[in-house]
Amino acid sequence: GAVELGPYRHYMQKEIFEQPRAIADTLEGVQGVVPELFDGIDGDAAWRVFKDIDEVLILACGTSYYSGCTAKYWIEGLAGIRCNVEVASEYRYRKSVPNPRALVVTISQSGETADTLAALRHAQSLGMTNTLTICNVATSAMVRECKLSYITRAGMEIGVASTKAFTTQLAGLFLLTLALGQSKGHITEAQSDAYLEKMRHLPLALQAVLALEPQVVSWAEDFARKENALFLGRGIHYPIALEGALKLKEISYIHAEAYPAGELKHGPLALVDSEMPVVTVAPNDELLEKLKSNMQEVRARGGVLYVLADANTNIENAEGMHVIRMPEHYGVLSPILHVVPLQLLSYHTAVARGTDVDKPRNLAKSVTVE
Ligand code: G6P
Image 1 (cartoon, rainbow, N blue to C red):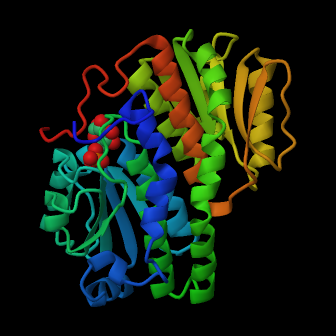
Image 2 (image 1 turned 180 degrees about the vertical axis):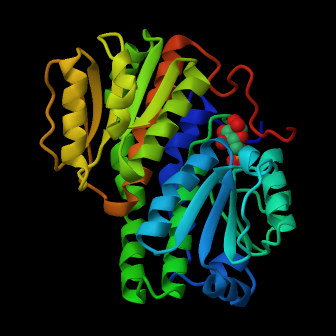
């Protein structure tokens, strides 16, 4: 194809390693969080919409749905706006209560996913005219049909399992959060600038995470011999656990499930034994102590933990506990870092199992039929 693999074995690996560049491109030329980012013309339309809306409704499929689930924590937690996230194929067919003042946000790498397009049209038919898409293809149907758009700068993504599209969606959704928060007076310009500064350091932080690849490879050797895996996360990292599990099943065909760690005792703990690896996303946030007691529950049942711990936590390697030390806690942007070792884990597990990484069986890059 036109896109060269360079030193990489697969497009997926190349795309994982392109993420620092993709995030840097996202921020190039961004001086402040201005409405122009979302309508490309003069920002007036975006500003009017942002001022008017009182709720956000996110519609998407697959990995794009999980970026929406992550954004919900930002939009409610930082911008102070109610946010619902729905799988497009569910929303389009259920009777829902429309809110004409909602901002409908579709998220799509391709901009052509049939269910997401149909969900958008369904929302429009219910009188919701404030529509915005976070999309990686500027010429797509999604961009044409939404009032506002934010084009992610991932560049062409070839691997069926989405990686750089996901993290650039998160970057775009974070910018949207800042814009919404400012328009509602919940985020000041100074706060917004401070967040932007933090975003500008993401490419370097991502490089540090990518440098952990050899350690992830050794985890992958264990995973390649398993048939099941459990992923745990809490709060804003719960959707990251979901994405980690999705990646693993998509390309390595290992059955994987993700749970919010607090739900462990309500079912999945019954599955835990020495054959069940339990991946735990453990950032040094206010939920860490809760998470540690969940990890104890796993260890007490002979489960083997694989923990992604931030540098400034005191989680140590031990019997039945494998720790990869991430950079220092990255605050609200931490999901953008924590997803990367999970992408690498699924990639290297699939390579170890000899599956067709870039073209997994039964899956398509873009699902344009229902
Ligand atoms: C397919 C792809 C996934 C993608 C999903 C949504 O299932 O294999 O990687 O997340 O479609 O695609 P979209 O283009 O709408 O983001």
